Length: 373
Image 1 (cartoon, helix red, strand yellow):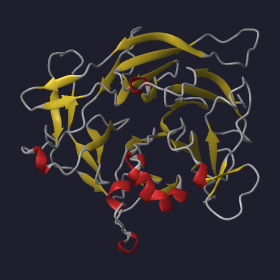
Image 2 (cartoon, one colour; image 1 turned 90 degrees about the vertical axis):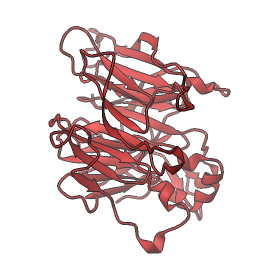
Image 3 (cartoon, rainbow, N blue to C red; image 1 turned 135 degrees about the vertical axis):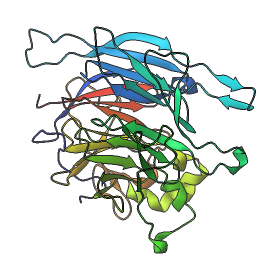
Image 4 (cartoon, one colour; image 1 turned 180 degrees about the horizontal axis):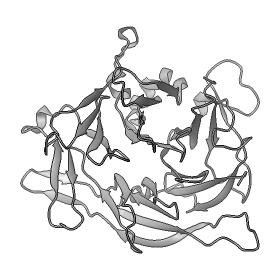
C-alpha cells in the first residue's frame, strides 16, 4: 500500500491526467448552511446528475450533446431542473423535529422517457415504497426504541443488492453492517449476515467507537463485494466472508494523532461517502482540505487530488497532492498542521461507464474527466 499521498492513476489512464471539465457555483466565504451539498448521484446512464442540499433542494444537471467539431469531447453538465424536495417538519405526537436535509438520492431504472428519483431524510427506519402506491410505505427495518433515551445506534446507510432484489444491507453508527433477506420475513428485524471487524484491544481509545461508525455502504456493480467507509479508512468486504474485510485502504491515517482536536471541533462526526468506478477496479472517497482519494484495487496504488478553484482552468490536469505527517516537509507537500478542516469532500459520485467524477465541496460541485478520453 502506498503512503498517504503517493500513487499512480487508479482511474484507467496511463498517467495522472485528470482534467477539469466544469465547476458549478462560486467560492463564497460566508456559505449559508442550507446551500451545503449533502448528496450527489449519477443516473444509471450517466446523462443526469442530481445533487441534494441541507435546505431540502434537489438540483438536476443534464449533459449537453457532444460538440461535433470536437468528436472526442464530451458534453458538459448544465442545470436542467431545481425543486424543493423536503421541508422542515415537526412530529407533534413524538415531539421530534425532522430537518429538511437531503441525506440520499437514488435514481430509479428508467422504464420510459420519464426519469424518477427517490430522496430521503430518515435515520431510524428503512421504508420500502411501491411506485404505484404513493400514500403509504412498508416499514422493513425499525431500530427506534420505545424510549428514545435508550437509543444506542442509528442507521447510517442502506442499499439494495444490484442483482438480487430481495437482499439489502444497512450500516450502523456502531460500525456494524447487517445483510437482510426479505424472503425470510417482511420485517427484517433479524439479519442473515453480520459484518464486523474485531477491534484490536491494544489500540482501543476513547475515540474508537466514534471513528468505527460506518458512514456509507455501497455494493459493487458485480454484487460480489460491498464497500464501507468509516472515519479513517475505506474497507472492501466479500459477501461470503463476514469476519473481516478483504481490503482496507487508509484514507487519512495521519489524522489519528489529531483525534482529540477533531473531537473538540466536531469534525470527528463528519460522514464521508464512498463510490466505485464502473468496473469495480477503483474506489473513491473524500477527505479534508478539499482533498479526495482514489485507490486502484488491482495495483494497490493510490492518489490524493484536490478540488479547488485555483486548479480549475478548463482542461488543466490535476496534480497529485501529498500530506506531510511530520518531520521535514518536502516541496509541494502539505503539512498536516496546515490542513483546512472546514473544507471537506463528504460526497462523491462516479459515472457508471466513464472516468467522469462529481465531487461536492461545501456549496460547490466539481466535475472532472479523464484526459485520456
